[in-house]
Length: 296
Image (cartoon, rainbow, N blue to C red):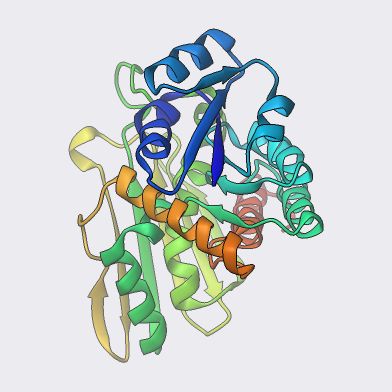
């Protein structure tokens, strides 16, 4: 499958471009970025072509991988789907619910495959644990915490990007937490509580359709010594925790690309497709509305 890369930021440089170049079933055709000089530098480093015109790249490929801020991603994903390209998207799918709905509509109308790169879902040990807990059922509570130090201290973290500064932990790491809880505890019936903690930290309580209560603690401004992520479930089967380690971002993205290839070949929607990305976006928007004191 011929694939192009949209984006030239840290994630594109550190993960996307190396994975697309190394993947045996992908032909890494080229790179487009909002900064042409960065696109050329990244393309040269990986032996591919830099495109000044995004539509020219979309014409030359069968799929695109996107490593762009969510508002930019949503607009270009609609454009790429309209050009018949399968989509390997980043999370969140969009910065707004209407933006995410537009992506889902474009995917359905074009009949293309989509996979959203919720990293944890593509780590084998984590994926197996999620499937096992979903099958077990009987969960009473689930707690997920994702604590990063992106905006703690000097501010020179590679992922201290403007969109993360604006949207905070809720929109950056909230999707990771939801991507684990939703397949295990079921969809969210209602966001029952949301409160702000230190800096951008957010605490959320969720009422799930299967009766369980889910809680999230999210931050990009934690002290470095306090960083980390984890998920704990408690129910009739006892207590269980998401396995730590066992994967890296490059390996996870490689598996996401593998699963996009399968979905494109078989025509079957992936569990982490754009529609799932939309549902995550809807929940994030509900939390944001509650934090701001609005209706949800």
